[in-house]
Image (cartoon, rainbow, N blue to C red):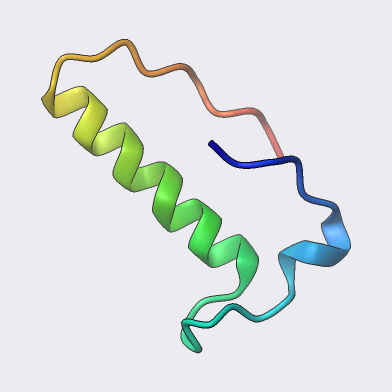
Length: 49
């Protein structure tokens, strides 16, 4: 689970130098969606934006 992020936080770096907060968040949500789908879980839609 992720807490709400402000637009300013999305461009910040992460400990993984190749990912910004926005890129890492997208990567995590994509992974959760793929794994959840493979497990036949009911994965909710992403919030827009």
